[in-house]
Image (cartoon, rainbow, N blue to C red; front, side):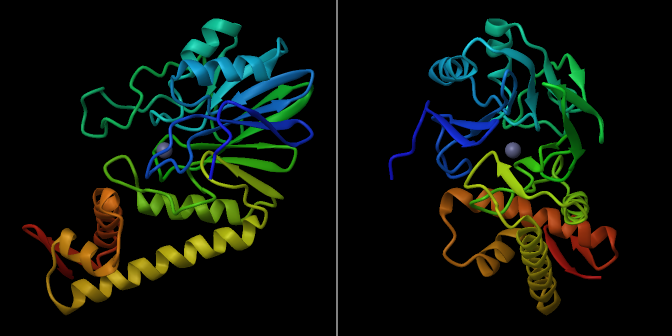
Length: 281
Ligand SMILES: [Zn+2]
């Protein structure tokens, strides 16, 4: 399939998408940047700092006033283009907090954009207005500790918290499985009509889809408990048993996800660690 890079795709009145050319095993065809609003706009998840993507965004904006460049979180495929775009169009960077970490601290890793410097941080429930209509932050930690979704006209821009093509990567130390599950639960209480994720197609049945994601994680947790219940196991051993036929490029992410489950289970007193093996507590 030819993905439509650097092209403006109008999804509904007031919501358009530009796909960045950064396809990978983690980003699907690439990061989807959204341009929302009409006379006045906001840009959601400007994406990686690729000149042709920033050009495409500037063209999509078409000289309209930009109320904000908004970032759901600070992974490198989401926030780096905020800076060159802000410079070109003179708009503020608004949204998630920078990660509360020293750039070389234990929560940082190469996937994070350590240069992200917002002009305004939105807390849960904070809004800004585009053409008099609110865009509201919904705090959804889990994939990262600083992750926000943005609600606008009944749509939820779900970033990497809920994606349309794959389950979300939750990798410690910054990723947190218990927080992720709580954030899924938070979405279940909402009545959004559609999700526009940063990767993959729109989710048109949000409540059902979130229920399915919760079920998937609970199934995975049960499977991990079963595996460590039969004998003490290392994480690679659990991955080999729990993810048959896994794309080798995703082995590390699967290991991180298993580790996130184990830490959550340990906190709940259900498993314990013995050297590099885990067993039932
Ligand atoms: Zn991410």
